[in-house]
Picture 1 (cartoon, rainbow, N blue to C red):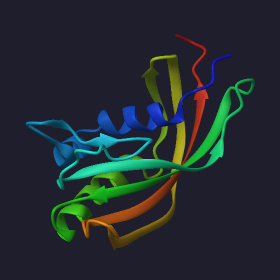
Picture 2 (cartoon, rainbow, N blue to C red):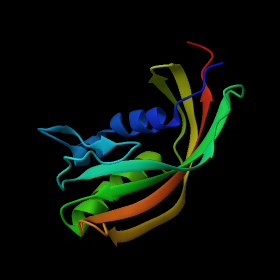
Picture 3 (cartoon, rainbow, N blue to C red):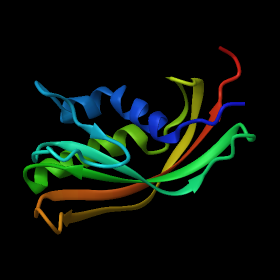
Picture 4 (cartoon, rainbow, N blue to C red):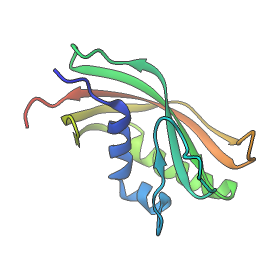
Length: 144
């Protein structure tokens, strides 16, 4: 059995959603950033950053549960809220969604919001963002 990279899974699910892409894609690319976080050259725009917030998987168990903290950025608070709404529409109670990862196929079993939304400002840059966390469950897809 292969351990599923839950960060790759979450990135793939977000990047495959038209509503999310409508918010975070521009002429410079898709602005979804997983661990380790925002790139050093990041400039404020509509974007999503997510980091692991608990859980964990075992390479010998084909099902896993992880929690992710998501930070939905925007130049203005209203923009950050629009990104959050797209993320919420994509992830809230999503279930049984097949995803193709670099390690093989997986099933995004379910997700549920566990905290937020909370409107905040980045303490260093004063950039507005909305914080939310989701728990996701995933399983290997043994039928290619």
